[in-house]
Length: 249
Length: 246
Ligand SMILES: Nc1ncnc2c1ncn2[C@@H]1O[C@H](COP(=O)(O)OP(=O)(O)OP(=O)(O)O)[C@@H](O)[C@H]1O
Ligand SMILES: [Mg+2]
Image (cartoon, rainbow over all chains, first blue to last red; front, side, top):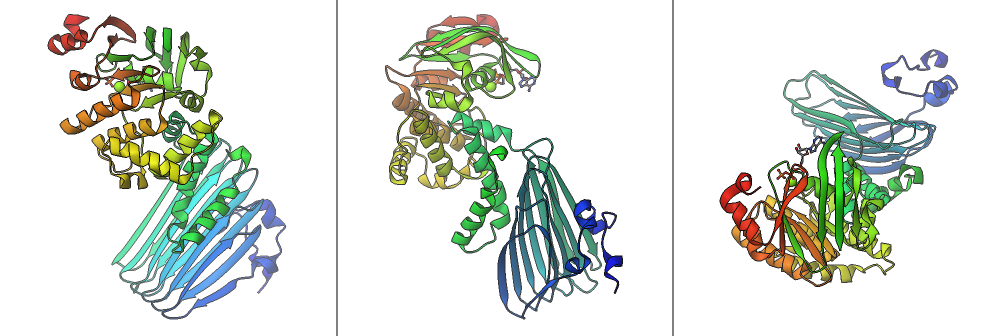
C-alpha cells in the first residue's frame, strides 16, 4: 500500500473539520497506526484517557455480551484528534464519554465509528464541548447497523457550549442502518452558557467566574456520568475543568 | 434603607420603568401591587442588576451606597435578596452545593470566614425546617422538578440561609396552597421582621398580606408609583380593582 496516496485531506468526509496544516505536515506512517484492543466474550474493559496532541486511533472488537467503556478528555492542541472504531458482537455494549475543552487556536475532535455487527448490541455516546477563544470542538460520530443486527439500540448525544464569539463547534452524525428493528437516537445542540442561570447564581451572591465554573462542571459531567467509580468520575471532572484557563472564566 | 429616585429603565430599547420613586426605611414592609405588565418584576430585576435591564435615568441608594454601581453578586453580598417570580432551574448543580457556594461567597465578600460543611448543614436544616421543606430536596438539582409551590418555599429557605437585610419578594405567594401560604408568611416574618431589615413585597393579592402585614402599600402602574397608602389600600384594591382606585 502506498502510504502517501492514503494521506487524507479535508475533502475526506471524516477529516472535513481537521486541521489542514497539521495534515499537510503529517507523517503517513504515523497516521496509519492503530492501537488494537480485544474485549473477550463476556468481559469488560473500561478506559480513561487524556488525548494528546496529534492523531490517535483505537480499534476495538467487543466480544459477545462483553462491554467496553471509554472516557476521554481532549484538552490538547493545536490539533488533537481521537478516533475510535468499535465493532460489537451480539449483546455487546459500547459506552463513550468524551469532552473537548479548549481555547486559543486549539482544534479538538472525536471521531467514532460504531459497527453494530450482530443483534442485541447497544451503544451510548455522550460528547460535550466547551470552547472559547478561536478554538474548535468537533464530534463526528458514525453508527453502522448491519442487516441482521436487529434489536440494536444506539444513542449519540453531542452538546457544545461556546463561551466566546470566536469559538466553534461542529457535529456530524452519520447513521447507516440496514436492519429494520432498531432504535437509533441522536441529538446535537450548540449554544452559550445559560445566562438566566448565571444571573440567578449572581443574585445569590455567587461571583460570575464561580457561577461559570459550576455551570460548566454540570455540563461536562454528563460525559462522565456513566463512570461507575465515584472517585474516578470526580477525578475526570476535575481534570477536565483544570483545562479552563482564566480567560475562559 | 432603600431609596429609589426617578428611576427609568429599559429592556431591548423598550422603556418599562418611567420615573419610579420609592423609599423603604429599616424595619418596614412595603407591598407593591399593580396590573400585569406594570413593571413590578422589572423593578426587582433592576434592583438585582440583571443584564439587559438598562437604567437610563435616576438613582438607587442602598444603605447610603450607590446600588447601581455594584455587580449583581456584590449587591447580594451587600445584603440584597431577590425572590424570583419564576425561580430558575439549574440541572446538574445541587441545591446544597449552590447554597453553600452562595453563603461562602457572600461571607468572603464581607471578609468573614467560610462555613464548614457541618455548620452549613446545620444552618440549612434549621431554615428548611422553618419552611417545612424536606432536607432531601436540597440534594436535588436547583429547582429541577420542583412543583411551583416547592420552588417558592425553596426561595424562602434560601433567604433564610443567606440572611439578607433587604428582600424584594416577587409574587412569592403565587403557586402556594393555603397551608404553604401561612408557612411562607410566617417564614418571611421570622427571617425578615427585624428593626434593621426591610422587605418589598410584590403581590397581586391580600392573602399574603394577612400574614405579612405591610406598613405601606404602593400601586405600580405603567412603570411608576401612582398611589401610596396604608394597609387598607390593598383591601380597597381587592374590592374595587385598579381602575376604580387609580
Ligand atoms: N425582553 C423584553 N423586551 C421587551 N419588553 C419586555 C421584555 N421583558 C419584559 N418586557 C415587558 O415589560 C413589561 C413589564 O414586565 P414585568 O414582568 O415587569 O411586569 P409585571 O408587573 O411583573 O407583571 P406580572 O404581574 O404579570 O408579573 C411588560 O409589558 C413586558 O411585556
Ligand atoms: Mg411580574
